Length: 234
Image (tube, rainbow, N blue to C red; front, side):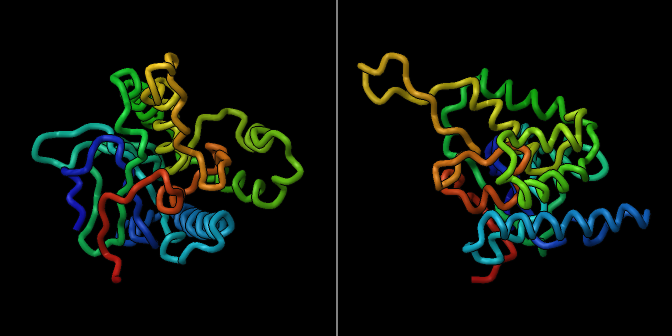
């Protein structure tokens, strides 16, 4: 079983299948229907983005990011979940399938980077889960070839920009931190350093637009490394 207390701040915890709400589905029929739609659309989108990846690598359903470390506990994690974003100790049952990941650039974060990372989670706290964002992702799968600026779809469907889904919150926090630092110099002659590749950069050299980052991103892209796993047979 993954020991959450040993994971570093900045780690992303992904759960797979329907485990997160298996024992706690909302009583409201519309909310239950909404969750089922969310699950199906996340899976479809992930298999569209990574068609050659094993099914178990595209079955991630939820992701949350570690924000604080507390002595003797699992720490506090940010979770953009239904109905609202929370910061709390996470639930991780022994029989859930889960994997934990860390971005390679996290080791270079400065205090300024961590402040930006934390600020994103504080800003998200209490915001509502964005079902429309799943529709945005589906529109992008269908019509992205015809849209020069992907933000057009976002502006049409969610002009307030206030709601978010789980994996977008995790990536947004790391992206904000990335904007605050430069990678170590390659040599003394490189006086200005170079920007480290952003956390949403894919193996093909293209960045996945932040609003379209699904939970399986951390599993399938090479700059994110697995640091924990439970519930998977080998």
